[in-house]
Length: 88
Image: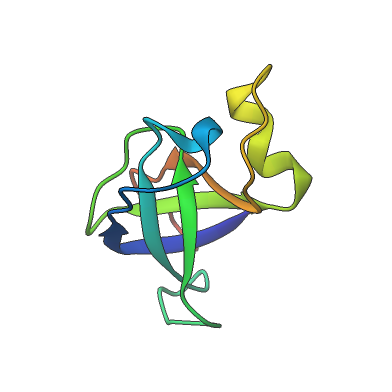
């Protein structure tokens, strides 16, 4: 799992049928200190996250697991909203 900040959302009127009703979010991956790392990406949302929230997400085949038995075509999925973290 990786940390990210939700920086936007994606509106798509035409998409794969298995993605119908699933929110798409734009994520900026971050490190444990909150600094941006890597490129932004689009992920499906399994937890109801919103812009400005910190989340953790998974990549790869596991990204479709929250939607089983359906398997939407995705390689990134938000699977949790971060309330806070402590490096101490």
